[in-house]
Length: 356
Ligand SMILES: *Cc1c(COP(=O)(O)O)cnc(C)c1O
Image (cartoon, rainbow, N blue to C red; front, side, top):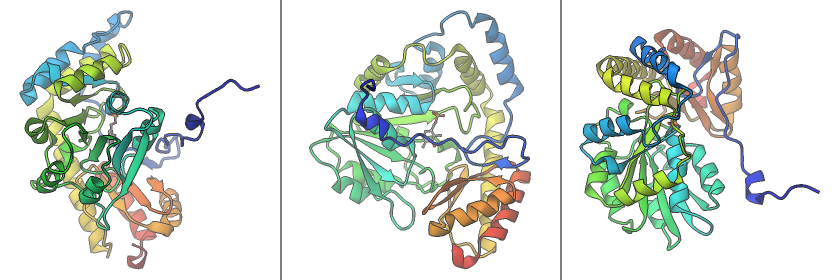
């Protein structure tokens, strides 16, 4: 006889990690990782904390919380950390929604959303993107019911790179009941250069039911250390601390985050470089006849529909590991100039104007 397990769990798709390059010489552009190695000051900060790994870390993530509270001019009561913003998102979902409750998000968006919602026992309500790859906020507002407890807005959206404008999000908020929490997931906020875009923290300040998710994984290059946070209404942030895995954020991650905040000027240069490369890649794709959408993330989105598997096979043959969503498209992370050049070669081999 089998041990009894929740049936909903065995039906869940496993979260799929981007393919590892191994020693194939291929470029891994499948996980939206930062192509730059850690800054020396950051590795030094981590090294200096190694002598204390026999001790538990600050459970309150005290120092980083202070720094973030100062930075955004919010109370430290509004800041809650986790082992990556995915863990914070999981905390938010568990604190907001259980069996019978609904969580609305756009689709396709971050693949962790439907998984985490179902792990919490809640019901995912996926609302299709518009034809131009954006959140369909009017349709998401139409999807609100008395069971809705939480709405996720991914800005800019992973994997399509499209952003939500401030005007659109204000119009949306006017239709969201105040007892429903709206989370603006800003994992890629540092790469978002469109001034029309909604900025999560502005919405947090203006509405009592908005939380913002930030991560050190992408722009700050700490994906391997796992640290992210929410800026949330006080009562929500308090619940996130209740739900959080105790001591989930390691001391090494906390040290690295502090060192990264100290090195922001240096990190900003790298971010600017990635944004410049994104502009170059999009321009080169367009020059070769591609008609896809722009992106405000550190990735580009190729809407290849049923041609996805073929295009992906060409990419692999050309040494480019992208993130393929069969039937939908491919997401390709912006890497170093050299990596991007190889991607552009692969793209011109794979993409005919008719195919995209
Ligand atoms: C990468 C990503 C995250 C952050 O992941 P962590 O490494 O857990 O901080 C969150 N949301 C989206 C949409 C992402 O793409």
